[in-house]
Length: 438
Image 1 (spheres, rainbow, N blue to C red):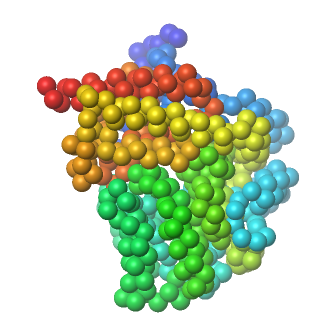
Image 2 (image 1 turned 135 degrees about the horizontal axis):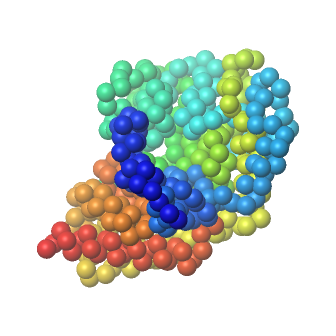
Image 3 (image 1 turned 90 degrees about the vertical axis):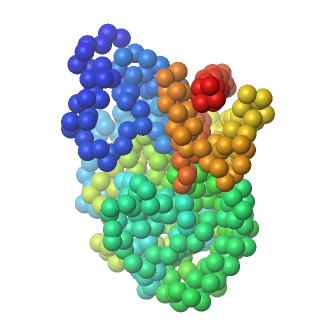
């Protein structure tokens, strides 16, 4: 690929700094020119193994042929009419399929929107309309979007809330239990009972929202005991239980939805990211009686359920089933965990990898100093992401303390490519640790 000075990474980064606000942070100053399956090629022709999947958006890989063909076929007919003006069959078919697959209680209905934050906002709206209440309970470390309500529900101040207040009222946060950091499920459930006694009558709470695995918060897995306890308390007080599957959904954790691991059936599930294989689409699926609470015109959005995105999403569901991507997620997760354990146990990296977490192919390693959970090492995480990129691997970090490396490999990646990426990561991590020790 020939590159002129005007379209090099450096030139494009300069243009980006002049044209785009600094608040839209970019992890790598590398500009994509092409992406296929689990490989991205930049404008200078350099190849990168993608361990981020566009932040869990392309579980079916970049430009999956079946998704691409479905969108091309739809584009031959129309790109937009607005479902609220002149509807189309693909929206209904996708809703029917999600109503069948999403593990909520009883008969279900689905609305389509555009972004994950929009799905969260609409889920809360629907819960408020159904209950006639206003309050919402969320969790520390949670991430539910960058809209005003999404920020309020998010359990992390920097960078998501700082400077953007005041936040909407009637939002309450509970500590998310993380055994690695000494926070047990019983403490969270006790905190909920204290909240009801000290701060808010449970009869004022419309909804409780939780991620089955925290995304931005650090890939901490919600224990079945926690989810079952929350379900029981929601039932006791007439609270709508909302599960945020924006990052965990669509085969990432070895099941179509992560909540399935617990056996708990929520009242509503929010989805986005991998739903449409790279096209902007989100959804809320829930119990029909709850979803029907808002009156006609109370829900919707001009681009919600865009026909190109609906075509892509129907193809995504086909691919997940036909290619066995739930089982593939478990296989990739096992491969990643084994490779990370090798790093954890190696003499040159003793005490660096403090914890390894995995649910299917949603995998994380927490970087610490001296093997101690209370000594996070965000500087090492930042250095590792940068060094890996220099060597041709796209990595993502996360966590309230900024010290977690998360793995979101496309589920269509081969074992050979995953191992190649892990070879790069291991080399980069050893170099970073050795340079600090020198």
